[in-house]
Image 1 (cartoon, rainbow, N blue to C red):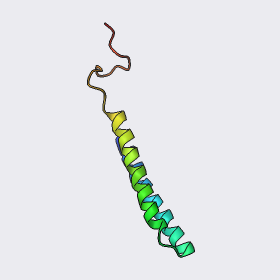
Image 2 (image 1 turned 45 degrees about the horizontal axis):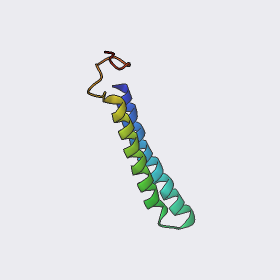
Image 3 (image 1 turned 90 degrees about the vertical axis):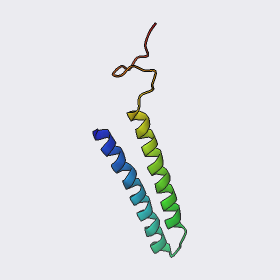
Image 4 (image 1 turned 60 degrees about the vertical axis):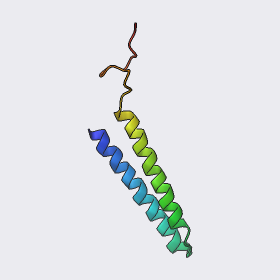
Length: 73
């Protein structure tokens, strides 16, 4: 369960940090595109992190629970 909270926190922080960096670039150089790029990159990182976390949390249906080896016949 701790891995789920860690993954969710990392995903949200990825969005917040990249948006903040985009905002900083906009303020520093007087541009308006970096904030949008930061939001897009942050959302992408957020989505990728949650997808990878999902793969870690869900076991394949043909694999018995609690084993790391495939069943032998």
